[in-house]
Length: 418
Length: 131
Image 1 (cartoon, rainbow over the protein chains, first blue to last red):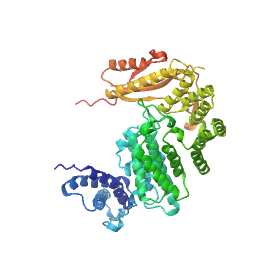
Image 2: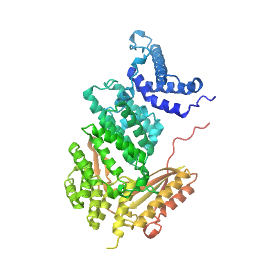
Image 3: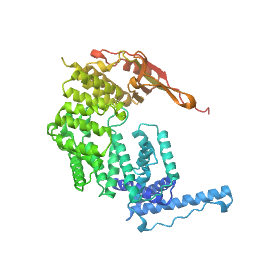
């Protein structure tokens, strides 16, 4: 028998348990790097012993036990090293040897607490994203570096600085109290949303999808949803990801070109993901007091439920954007609401709403305002003005597929005989 | 050995995809996608990036206390780096061959653009220790 012949189920089990074990170790020792090493050693021990002896009855307890023992060994050797160096035992820092853990102490929330820690508001979004993928997602530094198209050494630095700042931070490793909790959960959901979007649209490069990051974001959000099934926004975010991701196969053509929603081949949409997303968001909305993710998901659901683009229920989408705009100061929402208005009341009504956005600093350097205005002008029968704005938007965007799409859209209009 | 292949074009020069007919833009984009795929599957592509429009480009210098001083927008005639490839090849001849292929990317009417591609060898790390 080979030592590493773990079957797929055991492999998946280890992957699911790793963040819980890390959380349990982190709960006792703040040292991120040492805790991670200890968990790593426990996982290696499992990969060696489980195929030989069978998977233990309580695999998580087994892993935590081994990791804590490694951690204790690590601290003992640290003490020995320091006492050799210092020679004065009395000056040594007091290290409390951990009591062996008892089953009652194990907390299903450890993954969640770990997530709260990784998405700490003191970290920059890019650090939080990297640390979350590393500690909770279990991705290797090389995998994360590849996903973000940066050298591995850069990503390793980003992660180790994030760990350092957690070690120094005064925030305790425990569930935030109920006041802080909603706010901290908001930060977690935002980080998960960033990971998903990075995978779905990619902020740089020529490839439109980096599938792995989207899948990872969905997997992590699913975990949070399992831990907090009653939270409407968690369910809303999971639904939003599923409903958006469902269109993936239809979103790009053979050459990697972008295909807009209204031109997509809807038979390529993932019906199972749509069914799951719709069920999630419907259940969440029925509990009342919808939040932003739930409303975004509801809008995605209305699009996904239209078998043909002509049957899209635009009045309902507009009503949802009305609600969303009251809740959010995000100018992108206002932009999308203008599109929905155009679909219900005609392009001129949409264009009128856009004038209010001309002075918004956040949109000035963004290509979307120009792109939306170009679309509406095209629909309003003013191709010349539309061509100018499509090209202007193409100059501003930093996405290659999007630039190509906008250029082709302009060319299609300027090619047409007058 | 690694080479960088730089595509420098003047704003308002030949490489003005913006104003091309639709099928020529499509042919050009298709060429570039295929070109990158070919390099990548040959194991020769170390990196490639297209740069965003020069209309937002700035020249930056450090001023007093290291404060950035920015300069821009630039005249249409100024040359800009539009994009680059980094290739890992066995000989300079191979790098030139790849550059020539990129240079012949189709432009208006499918005619080859024959744009100038600047080819520069990338310096390597420290030499191996003598044993």
